[in-house]
Length: 193
Image (tube, rainbow, N blue to C red):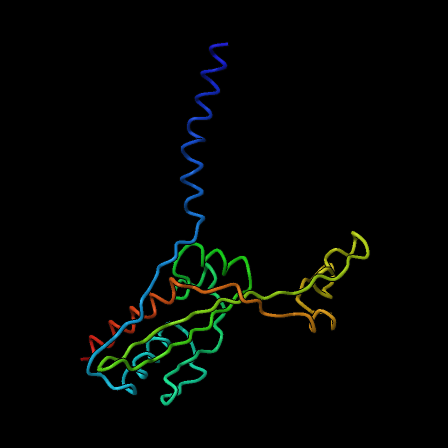
């Protein structure tokens, strides 16, 4: 009886200590950021430097309007594990999300004049591709649940009804990437002065 208690204790104590440690890495840590504000700079210069930062991070600028004080990028597909040069996955959660799902990120920079300060705020939205399932006719044709592929070669050929229902679903903001973009813009502008 005493041996069973000792054996049980020796097994459960490491499990009780290791499990919370492993699970703590699964939670996404959000970095709260404030808009950055800079003095004695003109809007055109700041927008140009911001565009260069976004380009270095593989974003492509879709719209840059000086009169509205806005810069928006085209959607950027999430970097995969083998793309070590990509800078859009800021943490383990983002890397896992990019590798498990088809996601895309869109960055929007807002430029606001407050007294003598020019403030920049960033908003990065994440969208996940949603492809509706096709009803399974039989277990032998389960491979055709998402596509018209054959058994020997799997490709993503969508059925016409799936194409109509396919959509990018908004799954929230990437605050870690927002903070990183603002930090890179701030550093670039400070080094250019």
